[in-house]
Length: 258
Ligand code: NAD
Image 1 (spheres, rainbow, N blue to C red):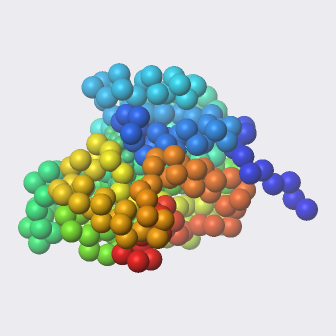
Image 2: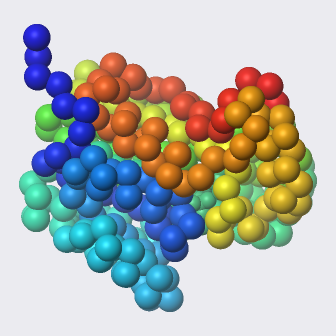
């Protein structure tokens, strides 16, 4: 029988998307660490750095770098540093999204061309770029993660243009899983239930959504970033070695009743 490890000891991972201690990416980073991985962590810009740096220190991250995916060269620089320092990468987490407020708060029908392009670029195409940069460093296989939401599948009031963007992200996950599978690289979309984060504060009537989900979800409780992190981290271990391309819901079961 082959040797299996249900931990991440000796594994190297990249975490993109920590803004503060409420970020889903931080919940994932903690779980990756808990299973023994070493992490590279990024922050959006100098304004975000003071919030992220202490968390990166607590996570014992040997690499901490700026990464605005819309700034030319920054994502590439992160992967160069990982290649230089580690010479390999075992997993990478993409936990970022953005849409201009006017477009996020309006109907899909009214979404501007620039707003749509920006939202797709930052929230979806950046995951493609991450995968392309990760591929040569994942010579022994690896796992790529992105964060989606139920609004990709069903119309969720006030989720607006992020619904189509997340639908594209989930389809991208399936295609990349098919393309990278032969190299042992797995690709996952994780779909958490609603969590009070900075990104979520941009969505209108978010509190109502949370109450609705809490009441209807089979688990009758809301998820926490720790729950999302544990499921995600487990999928990066050998326990997930033949799981790829899917959208994995961490939502107390809401998607089966919602
Ligand atoms: P968050 O605000 O903590 O994280 C969003 C991150 O996106 C931040 O770290 C921000 O710096 C980053 N980001 C935005 N523009 C960027 C850019 N140009 N370059 C690099 N990074 C950029 O909020 P969160 O809720 O943890 O969001 C993480 C992911 O989870 C997002 O994809 C979001 O859509 C998804 N998600 C959130 C929920 C929820 O209820 N909060 C539910 C399902 C999915």
